[in-house]
Each structure stands twice: as C-alpha cells, then as structure tokens.
Image (tube, rainbow, N blue to C red; front, side):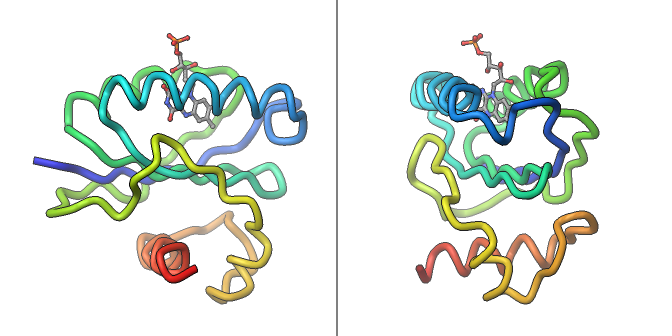
Length: 129
Ligand SMILES: Cc1cc2nc3c(=O)[nH]c(=O)nc-3n(C[C@H](O)[C@H](O)[C@H](O)COP(=O)(O)O)c2cc1C
C-alpha cells in the first residue's frame, strides 16, 4: 500500500538560501529516496518548506524520523497523511523551481496556514505544468 505525506516546516539558517545547502539536501534525498523507492517534491519559499513524499509506509516513516531530528529545519507539521492508489510524483525528489508562480496560479498568498486543500491544488498545478 502506497502513502502520501506532506509536511510544512521552517528553514533554519542558510538552509533555503545557500546553493550549497540545497545541493546537500537534494543529493542525499536523491540517493536515499532511490534506495527506498520514495518519490516527491520539495519547495522552499520565504523561509518555509513544503515537502511531499510518496512511497511505502515504513519507508516514509523512516524518512520522517530522520527529518524530525534534522536541525536544518524546525516546526515540522504534517498536513496530509493518506493512503493513495497511485503516485502523483515520479522523481526521487524534485525541486519546485518557481514557487512564487505556483502560489499565484493556485491563489495562495502565504504558506503559513497551508491546508490539505491548498496542497491538493498545488500538486494538481504541478501535474498540469
Ligand atoms: C527540507 C529537507 C528535506 C529533506 N528531504 C529528504 C528526503 O527526501 N530524503 C532523504 O533521505 N533525506 C532528506 N533530507 C535529509 C534528512 O533529514 C537526513 O539528513 C538524511 O536523510 C540523512 O541521510 P544519510 O544518513 O544518508 O546522511 C531532507 C532534509 C531537509 C532539511
């Protein structure tokens, strides 16, 4: 059974702004997620992080446990945790390169009070893009 988990968090220090730290996160994600058959995407915008992860329950839970203790972000809040019949995302961890445009097109002005409905709209926008 596949699951999808989406969380929001806040970046700490240079996490969201330095090319080096982004490259480190995306490098580890690519390596580990391929190994664990996880797919997803991550967005960094004005100090906020939104990450969607799809895969098997045990693999997602193991990643969430690592994320919870990662000092590069804080205030992790899971807003979607649901069984799915098929994946919406097919890359190990894609970076959303233009969050401002995606937010504008989906009618979002801030990521601070993101709901499950907002997340669905963002994922559908990504699929249509
Ligand atoms: C915003 C953010 C997203 C991350 N996403 C992933 C991910 O999708 N997969 C992953 O394995 N690690 C991810 N990490 C890194 C993990 O927290 C952890 O450092 C890493 O999995 C440890 O891997 P290692 O044991 O191979 O060094 C992310 C970290 C941050 C801050």
